[in-house]
Length: 330
Image: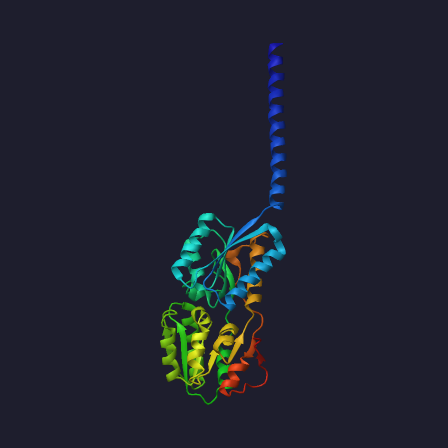
């Protein structure tokens, strides 16, 4: 009889354990579903410097994510004021805070993020060439690691053709860029090849930062018939300095993007940086919410390029652009 009672007691204990386990699983499942539904995301944004193109990319990125997530996404946004070491400090702070995703707006923030984390998803925007920025020799269109994003590269062969279309009789082209920006060097190297094919003689004029941009620009203006400036962030934040040198010298500038052209150029083959940032925001949503694997995501490019010209500077220099160019809105 005692043996039977012990068996019954043991059975009751096991039943209670299984019941408790079942309740625990049920409770965990319910709370898990609620947690996914109510999940919030913290996104860190590091922008290299304040200027029109990068500002537009950041705006597009934030608006894309906000449209999809509403108040479930918060942004920690910081600007490095053009200083590369500051980019590293900002990114390190994001990593310490364990943000859900990092937006690296320009090459220096991307390089800082690549060095700081291999686990947090990093999306770049306003990056011309990811292989150059990340020092990858075997490039397949994706990084294969925790980095993807969008590129602001407008076809350089078409930019060279545009320069030739407007200035077919020019002989010397000055390639004006910041030596601290790897993607600027990449662009002027390609443009050197493309313009040489078209019969131009090219000369490099590299400045190290905003402190020597005027003196180097004066040398470029004295030695060139036309100056080409790529999508260079330091130049983009110093267009008034460039314009104050080049316009009085009657030396036209072909620019790699609209913001530079608006400030000191005559023409550009431009993209929409807002649209570029918006596309990056859509990629972020796929990663954060849909679980997309960033290691397999291709770098995306701007879908359209537009021929644009700066009417004021063209009029001042007596330059008539061919048909098919849109005037940049002031």
